[in-house]
Each structure stands twice: as C-alpha cells, then as structure tokens.
Length: 411
Image (cartoon, rainbow, N blue to C red; front, top):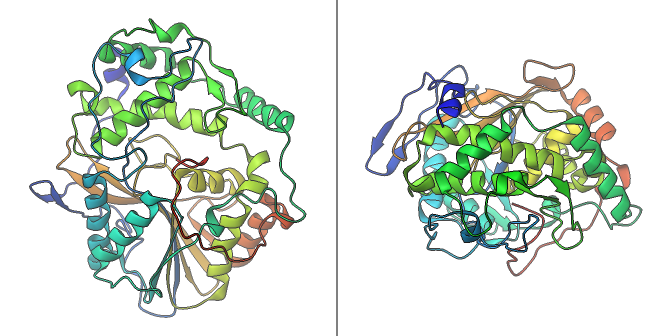
C-alpha cells in the first residue's frame, strides 16, 4: 500500500462548499465546470453524459477459477448497494441533480434544453435528475427515451456484424498496443491486501487473457485483470454512492485503481476497429445536432462505452488531473459548444476530493488530432467523424423503447 500511496499525486487546487451530504458544485480553473461564461448568442451545445453512480453485479468475475461471485475473491464481506443491479444509487442520483443545479447557475447552457436518454433505468433516472436540477419541467419535449443514438451500428442495412474472429483479433491487437502498466501488479497486490484473500485464493497470479467472448462479451478478458477491474469499479461506485469504499481504505487509492479499470475497458471494449461500426450512431447524432446550428442544448444520457467509443474513433484525449487520462466518471460529460464555425470541446466531471462530502465540478479541454487546444472547426469535426466511422453504420429509423433493459454491453 505504501508503494501505491507514494505513486499517488497530491490533491488538485480546487475547493467547494457543502451542506451535509448535499453538495454545491463549483467549477475551478479557466472555463469552470461548464465550459465558461460564453456570450448569449446563437449557440449549439451538445452533452454526451455518462449516467449516475450505480450498483454493480455480485457475480460477474471471470478467472481460472469457476467461482464468479465477488465474495469468493475477498476475505471481507462486500456491503450491499441497497438497490437492484445497475440501478442508480440514492447518492448517485442526488449528485446528478446537484450537477444540474450547478449547470443552471454556472454552466451557461443555452435554452431550450432537451434530454435524450438510453432505454435503461439508470439513464432514465439520470436524465430526469439532471433536468430537476436545472429547474426544468420533464415533458415529452424536454425528455425522451430513445435507444437509437446509443445503439451499436452493427447489424443495420449495409453494416454487418463482426465475426467472432474479427472481435478476437481486434482485442488482441489492443492488448498488444497497450500492455498492462508497470505498476499494475503492485496495484493488484494492494487490492488483495485491502480485500484479504477469499475462497478463490490469490487471484493476482491468474493470467490475463481473452476468453469466452460469446458468453460474456462485456468482459472478454478473464484473469487477474478482470478481478482488479471489477474491484476498482466497485470501489469507485461505493465512493460516489456515499458508502465506505474498500472497508475504510484511503480514498486516494481509487484514482490509481481506476487506471486498471480504464485500461481494461480500452483493451476489451474500446477498439477503434470495432467502434467504426459500434459508435457510428452516437458520433453522427452529435455531429448532426451541432451541424443543425439550432440554439439550445441537446444532452445525450448514456454510458462510458459511448464516451470511450468516441475517444476511440475520433482520437479524443482529456486529462482530468489526478484521475487517469480519458477516464469516464459517473455523471461526467463530453461537452461540445458550437459558436459560428468553431466547436469547443471539454470533459466535465464531478470530483469527490478526499471525502464523500467534498465534490467539485470541474472541466478540462478535450483535444483531437491536429487540434490540441480543445477547439475544432465544424468542417474538421465532420472529417474526423467521416474518417472514424463506417458510413453505412449510422443511418436508421428513430427507435423509442417502451421498457427498460438492464444487461447490454453498456456499463
């Protein structure tokens, strides 16, 4: 643990105000948490939000052992989330509402504001909480549920599904391009020390490998990397849910642990080769909204797979200070502000600095290849989308789902 703590960077130079567990979110640094006080003229803003902090499943760990339950990989008992699997936690929903309040006071979102949420419970709850914070009334105009922008482009007319071999090759290529970090073993051993050894034994000795893509396509890498990724995500969701993460572990470890989870997603799920089809719908939905030039804000409420997919196909990069590069935190958003022919892009995120009661709303610029300062022309943005996606994979009829599903390759 000492080695992990030594590797951890110090706190960021930002502060906030608080009232109990209810938070008042404040931006810091140039541009604040909402992209700055832009002049009120014709402006088009698009948000690609990740949903609230949510519960995690108890039985989706994959290693050499047939045991899949979290309890088998720790000597300590995991505290329950008190909500169904993949549902927003109470505090997770509250933080999103506070974000909406912050955006209302400081984010300078142009009106009217429309929210499009994916057809899963956590996105529905997140979208409504965000609108409540903004002081907006939820109507059929301000809020809709539509799976279309968040769905994969695979399987549409002219956009075939990838074969199993193509998926395996793409993941293997990602693994080769992005090997595990040199400190991963130290971090895994720190997690094992925190959780203590469970019935499955010392899971850090299991090799990380591609396995059972058909059975669990959302977790195609099995072994120690799978356990570490699952632990890190659970610690994060506990922290953002006002629980005690890791049985009282120091919360400063979590950004370091999340680096393993982010690496896992990058290798297992965020291959540019695969997302040329998978992320074509969301990329074109954002581009179309910006190209419309209509005054107002369009907020897409989806998943880290949507944010990570855009990162993969557009070459986007953001560096949220002590969090890992290109991380996708609960409640975070990629923000696109168009004024004239220029689009300013930022990553906006709630940051719990040190404790559950110390959140910060902050933003950092998002760069693109050839555009390091977070500003890109509409023409260049279109060229990036065209180059990064398969043209046949984004056009489809409008889809609005009546029910909610809870297991898809979305997290």
